[in-house]
Length: 358
Image (cartoon, rainbow, N blue to C red; front, side):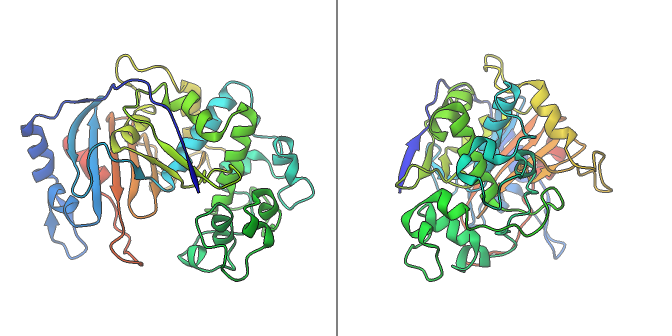
C-alpha cells in the first residue's frame, strides 16, 4: 500500500499556553465517571488510551499534552479523514464544479448499470445512499462476508487471502468491487453510516478536480490553512485512496483544520471556506431542518454531530476526534489508540472543556 503526501504552506497556530493556563485546564476540568467519581483532564488524558490532546481558543493553543507520541508525529486519524474529504467536496460545490443533485454515474461512468446508478450525490453526502455495508458493529471490520471488510481488502487494509472476497477485491479493482454492493433501501430514506459512500465521494472529488485526492486536498485545503507538516493519505496499488479513513497528520494540523470552521480564524490565515459552506452544513438537507429535543441538527457532509450551539464533531476509530465550537471559538483535537480489541465507548470531554473554561 502506498502513501501520498499533502503539502503544507506555513505555520500559523501559535502556542500561547503559559504554564498557568495549562494547569488551569488540566487540573480543574471535572470529568464525571459512570460511578459518580470525578477526574481531571490531565488524569483522563493519562489513562493509557490517549495519544495526544490539544485545545485551541481564539486561534491559540491553551492546552496540549502528548502522553505517548511526539508533537510532530503523524498519527492515523481514521474517519476524521471523511471530514477533510467532504470539505474538499464542499469547496468544489461552492465553485460550481459539483452539483449534489446529480446521480453518481454523472461523475463516475464506471458505476452505470450498478445499484449505485441513479443515487444522488446528495444522498452519499448525507450518509443516506441506502447501499449495503452499514457499519453497525465490529463485524463490519472482521467478517470477510461484510461489504466494508471487502472494501477495505480492495484498498489494501484487510487480507486479500480472506474467504468470501469478490475477485475484484483480490485484484484491488475498486470500481469492480463497488459494483458488487447492492441496494438495501431507497436512497434518501434513512441515515446509515457506510464508508463506501465516502470512497465514492473521494473518487468523484479527484475526478472533478483532475488530480489525485491527496493533491486535490493539498491544493484546496492543506496548502492554504497554515499547516506545519505534510500529511499523508494511503492508497492501494492502483492509486485508489482510502478516503474514508486513510489520512495521517499531526495533531496541531488537525486542529488547524478545525479552525477553518470557526467564526474567527487566526489572522493571516487564507480564506479556505466560504460562509455559504458553513451555512449549508448547519442548515442540513433532510426533512428535519430544526433541532431535535437534544439540540441536534440533521447530519450532513458526513459530520457525526451538528448542534444548534454551533458545534461540529467528527470522530474516528480508536479515539480520533476533532470538535469545533463556533460560539465559544474553541477547537479540540484528539488522538487515541485502543487498549483492547473491544474498547468501551467513552465520551470525550470536549463539551466540558468548552463550557468550563471558555
